[in-house]
Image 1: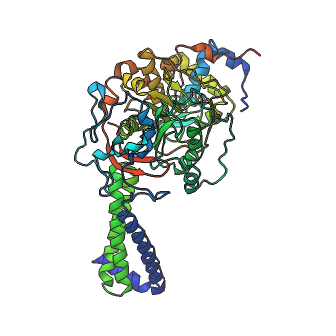
Image 2: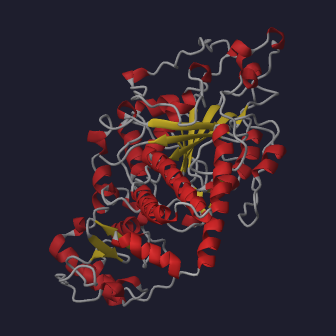
Length: 452
Length: 117
């Protein structure tokens, strides 16, 4: 009662004009927001951020791998819908209840597999194998980050790249079927530079590749954002009523309550965000990419690292490959010989041999050292380009929030040997919240949980 | 980055330089301004010395402050005080106070040798 009186008194004593103006502005902003939200929702879009490009939530069409299939007699045709066989008895992540995105029918399940079913019989042309070293390479390149990047233009400049960031060489058959996995959270600007520089390089290297951006998002955050939207809409409603001079008494009280609820929800959303977990996102990328295509090689790249020489091959070798060996951040040399961070490449077999990557490294640091340890314990060693070819630029940035140095990292890497088969691909659980096929990349938004 | 330090103190600490260069790299990445909070403690500077036992700041009161110094003094480029406190830590806790040492600086130490000038 007291509150209501003071509020009433307040609104009567306040210059009515400014309250009116504030309400009008809020109505206009909310109406715009709701309008945009509605449009995107109907188009099947992710509500939590406005995407850069028009994305399409469909499965990839089978056309792009037509030529590649003919020349490889050993590749078996998989019936549509059958998941690729995984040794290890690895859990193909049980999906408790919710496995599709909040946006309805964003991804028909079985049809995600690219098969040859769509191939028309007339395209039986046999292509030569691509040469060992591509004749298209240019060598050292200028890499800068001081210009704006428009992904629409990048898509136009790379017309051979198909929806979802897929490319297959047209004139030869590449043995390198590479899924490039990029762990991601809130780095859209960096991703634009990555796509701008890497697509031309990867095509010159004559790789059969696809780009997978694995976006860490908490499911709770996704839901809370929807709740905030709802609350703001309610607030909008009361503001409108206030302007219409109806329900003035009630609307003041209720709008206060709703504002408080919205603020609390926003705080909870931000608080609920977990520490970044690079290695687990890479595990997810491995599994999700294999649902699309029979990749035999996986390049794991941080979003802010760009190679300076296209002789630095983004594909797999007989031993696990370390690609970012000479980063500008480390004076164009290796910070230490056991360093395996930045950009690396493992064949499917190499990855499976080490039970994939650890899932328990939350925050910055250590997971790359753990992976190095896994390889060593399985008798493997690192393959590297020389420091001239291996030069890389890193996009400078301030420290990310929720990615502080992990205080447990040193203790964990001291115990890799004991934990590597208890923590990895065989204990990987996650929820895919959304899959978006953009022209230049596939974005998989995933809830990977929190530190246990 | 210019580092000013007194040679005597540096020599005292350097039984084996490569171990220390390695440990420092993995602790602070050679950045004298490194501050990291974890487990209720805050660690400062090149050697990542913490405010619970070794230096005082306004977050943990009272600190044991064994080195008798304000933690902020470990964030500048004058390493004399850092090295002195690190020596005290080494004497009382041993090198494994620095958690990076065992997993990353127990072997392959040749790579941390300074080049002959």
